[in-house]
Amino acid sequence: MTERKYRFSWNLIGDLQLGRPNLGPYTRVEVYRLMQFTFRDVMEDDLGTEKTDQLFYRAGKLAGVAFYRQYFNDLKDLNEFIRQLQQMLKDLGVGILRMEKVDMEQGLLILTVSEDLDCSGLPEFHYEICKYDEGFIAGLLESFSGLPFEVKEVDCWCTGDRTCRFTAELVR
Image (cartoon, rainbow, N blue to C red):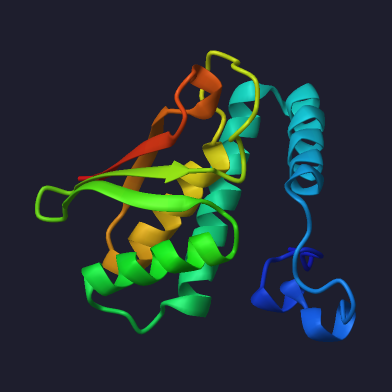
């Protein structure tokens, strides 16, 4: 097998203080969305919608696992994990996380992300678009719990709702 050129590691984030001493670690949402939606367009054209959605979910899941390892790896208390995650997502401008239901014994969580980086403010498309977010949440939950979760967006800005709502169910 040949060596992969782009295998993800946190080192690919780089030293932002060194590399961006004047601009810092932030950019505008429209630049992020420009990258995301042009990637989606090219991938969908080459691979089809279903495969593109699968890849965005997988990439989000990989990101969720890496994010958990980078920032929360030693946390064992669910309430503290949620509290810190809420604060970090807000501080990074990703969105405002709220938990509507948390039942780890039943393996069910319902959560919302308002002002979501991926879709808040977009026109209505009549379908959910936050596949990357689904995977990101799955990666976070699986990393915390050690158990597999399937995450599905059930409400989205793009379906007329003003928040993204996700169900996370333990895969049995």
